[in-house]
Length: 284
Length: 244
Image (cartoon, rainbow over all chains, first blue to last red; front, top):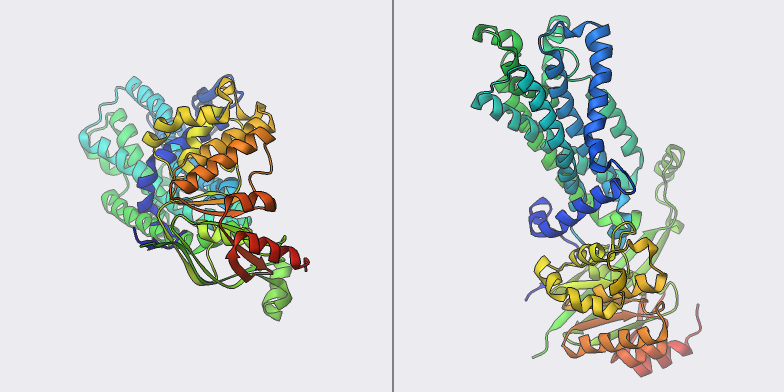
C-alpha cells in the first residue's frame, strides 16, 4: 500500500465508489424531510398539483392562455421539468452548509452532498411524471420513440445543469451565505425565463433576434421545449405540417448546444468545488 | 521491515481569526491588505512519522495544535505548507457521533455512520451484531437516536467507530463520556486494535489513560513539536512546562 495524501478525492468520478453511502444519505434526507408527517411522501403529489391548479386557473382561465390546445399538459410538463431543476439546484446549494457537522469532522468526498440531491429530487420527480403521463393519456397521448427520447434528454439536461450550478454555488455558499439568496432569485426567475407558462412563439414574435438567441441559450428553454415535444405535442394530434408551429425552429440544434452548455457548467462547478473544498472544514 | 503509516512532512497550518464577511469589512480588507494580527499559526513546521502498529499519544495543553494535526491527518483539513502521507484507510474518531442523525433510528445510524467512516455494506452487515453487542443498546435499536440518553448515544457511536477496521485510527478526546465500566471496555477495545497491528494516534487530556494505551508520546506546544519520546517521559515533560 502506498502512502497517499489524505483529503484529496477524485471529484465526481469518485462518488461512484461511495454508492452505498450515497444511497444512505438519500434515504436520510427523505426520512428527515418527512419526519413526523402523516402524508409523508404524498406531499410530493400534493404540492405540484396545487401549483398546477393555481397556474392553470390564474394563467389558463383568467388570462386565457388555455386557448393553446391541451394547455394543462403543456403547463404541467414544463412545471415538472422546472420543479426538478429547482429542487436539485436549491437543495444542492444548501447541502454542504447543512452537513457542516460531517464536513468538519469526517473526511468523505464532499461532492456526495450535492449529488445526493439529484436522487432526492428523482424520488419526487417520479410521481409527478406518473401524473403527467396519466393526464396526457386522457388526451390520448401516443408518443413515438423520438418524443420519449426528447423527454429523457430534457431531464438529463436539467439534472446536469442543476448539479453543475449546485456544485458551484454550494462551494461558494460555504464562504458567502449570499449564494443561497442569489440562487433563490435564480429559481424565482427560472420559471418565467423559459416557456413553461406561455408558448415560445410569444417570445419569438416580440423580441429581436439576439435576445431570442440568449433566450434559447438558457439550457432550461430547450429542456422545457423538449418536454413539450415529449408529452404535449403527441397529445394535441396536430397534422405533421403543424410541427413547425408547435416546436421552435432548430430545436435539435439548440438542444445540442444546451447539452454542451450543461457539460461546461458541470466542469466549472466541479473545478470550483474541488478548489474550495480544502477550505470547507475551517470556514464552516 | 517496518513501514511508516503516517508521514507528516513539515506541515504548517494557519487560521484566520476574524472573518470578513460584510461588504464594508471586505472593502476595508481590500484597501489595507491582509491584517497579520488576524492570522493564527496553529501548526508551525511540524514533522513526524509514525510506524505501522505504533500507538502515539499527542500531548499538549489547549490550543497546542493537537486536534488540528489530527484533522490534517484525517484529511478533513488540508495543510497550508508541507504535505501528509497516510498508508491505508484512516478512520477518525475525531468526534464520536459525528454523522449520527437524531431523527434516524439506532440501526439506521449504525449503517449511515459506518458508511461515513468508509465501511462497505457487506462489512457493516458482517459486524452489525458485534457493534450492537458492544454498545449494549440492542433494546433501543429501532428507536430514534434523539430519544437516547447521552450515554447510550455515545456507546453506540463508539461501538461503530471501533469496529470500522481502519489501518490508521485517530482518536480525539472521546473517552471523556461514558461511565466507568464502559470506559474500561472501551480502553480494552482500543488496546486490542493496537495488538492487531493497527496504527493509533490519540489525543486526550486524560494523561493516565494515554499512558496506559500509548507507547510513544509527542508533545506539542503552541504549534511546535517540542518532544518526541516514550509516553512516560513525554507526560513528565509536558507536566514540567507550565501552560503558556
